[in-house]
Amino acid sequence: MFADFDFDVIVRSLPYLFFHGMAFTLTLTGLSLAGSLVLGTLVALMQLSSIRALSLLAMGYVNLMRALPLVLIIFWFYFLLPWIGQWVTGASRPIQVGAFTSALVTFTLFEAAYFAEIMRAGIQSIPKGQIAASQALGMTYWQTMGHVVLPQAFRAMIPLILTQTIILFQDTSLVYVLSIPDFLGAASKVAQRDGRLVEMYLFAAAVYFIISFAASTYVRHLQMRIAVVR
Amino acid sequence: MNYHWNWAIFWEPSPEGWGSYADMLMSGLYWTLATSIAAWIMALVLGVIVGVLRTMPYRIPAAFAYAYVELFRNIPLLVQMFLWFFVMPELVPEDFGRWLKQMPNAPFYTAVISLGFFTSARVAEQVRAGVDALPRGQRMAGTALGLTLTQVYRYVLMPMVFRIILPPLTSEFLNCIKNSSVALTIGLMELTARARSMQEFSFQVFEAFTAATLLYVAINLVVTFGMRWLEKSVAVPGYIGSSRT
Image 1: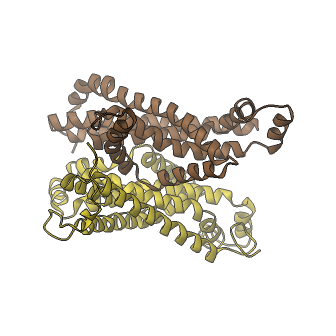
Image 2 (image 1 turned 90 degrees about the horizontal axis):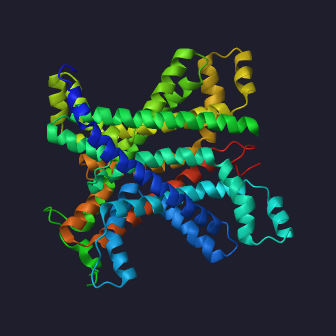
Image 3 (image 1 turned 120 degrees about the vertical axis):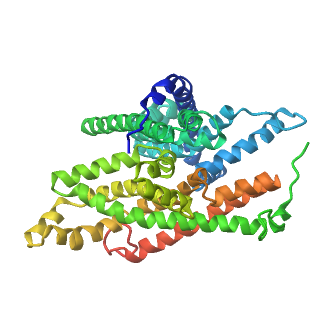
């Protein structure tokens, strides 16, 4: 069964797997995390806004994104972005959008819907009296949100945000459908070139498992620590 | 250069030799539903067993259930599908492996198994959370009445647990339907794959994806309303979630 298991193919491809593949995966995860946190917070604020049109728009966005499979959304943006680019820049034909840009925009917009739900729960967990107090002190809406509500909401939601980040990290493997060499794509490339599917896919699974398991164990500890403080 | 909209494309014959493009999408919808429902049944059965094991007062079953959940939760679904599809047939005895590779409809069975295991870990977590959410006194009262552990679970705990976890199970089922689209990477012709191939054949990208989007939204609405009706009809009067108080 494991008699002709070839460890050497893994060792030989390690630099390629990590310096290209994993670097791509982590860059994509990090950048889309930053983007979708900001965007998600804005969407959450829109959802809770007293302006009806804004909250309806935000809710429609979140519900639509959450109703669709990520794979379909990856395809949507892959084909849609060149046309949007043409429309924005006023070019005469659809512009070229690189696969990385396309993936980054997709994950940012997709995850923003999930982070919006998390941030909305966080904002709603802040007692109403704090908002009333801030207003009584003469703070504007943005001051209230920026100095009082959001820092607390953010802190309360850190475990959920981290859990969602682990999911995001796993989800980035789906850029495989655009044939981008992320970590899994790189492993798959080597696997097909050398005919070593068993070794490469098992190794990829092990790496994903170790990273996600370590991260989720850490989140659990963090959650317990926060729970004790309260 | 402008995009040429052509909504009549759905009624044109598809290059596959049978039916129109609309029929092609419908067959995709059929496989999406078949895969996700089969996987969901598997996930429910396994998930309930593993979730209950995790709350048992015995060390070994609880440890096994913990390992099970962590294993299937921490590997991306796409990687799990590759493992079942490409790796598993190589690791079993040769004859069995060859039989697996030649099986008709292999992508479908592989997708059901990988999606089933993947979702079962999530269901198990919900079941565990549901059992933990019940007051400890219920388990004790059951034991004090002389019920065996099986009876405590069967007659006291699980009837309430299922009602508590219906809303999170609804979203897990929706996730299961959405995740079935990952199976296009191993060649299952489900809805997203069909929309993609329609785009490749006809070049009508946005019509194809719009149709797929509307179908997914429709599935979501049907499931959400169906589960809401189920929640109402099984609610226990006096508890949260029941309309009668």
